Length: 139
Image (cartoon, rainbow, N blue to C red):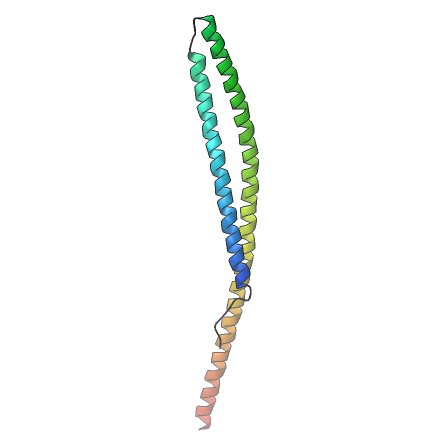
């Protein structure tokens, strides 16, 4: 009997490629989110340090105030970016999970077809053994 060949092997290979691409995109999105969260931590720390500095001259107070306003603007933008990235990461995670499910469906089908093939091979072998045993008895 011939060797087992899954009829949808090329599609299964393609699903593996899709899954790996989805995994890479998810990891990339997660990395971008982590980077933005780190930037947010740094901005918060910088703002905390700035708030502890007490300036004595009006000009330096004014400069400090402008810098504080700029930091607040950056904080707001970073929080907004983080929220968008969280949504993007969730979409990429769902795409990865979907790709994984699609691959697993084909793998299960492959396993089922392989089991059916092995059963057919076993039956063919048993049939040949039975035939050989009958020939010995007749001789």
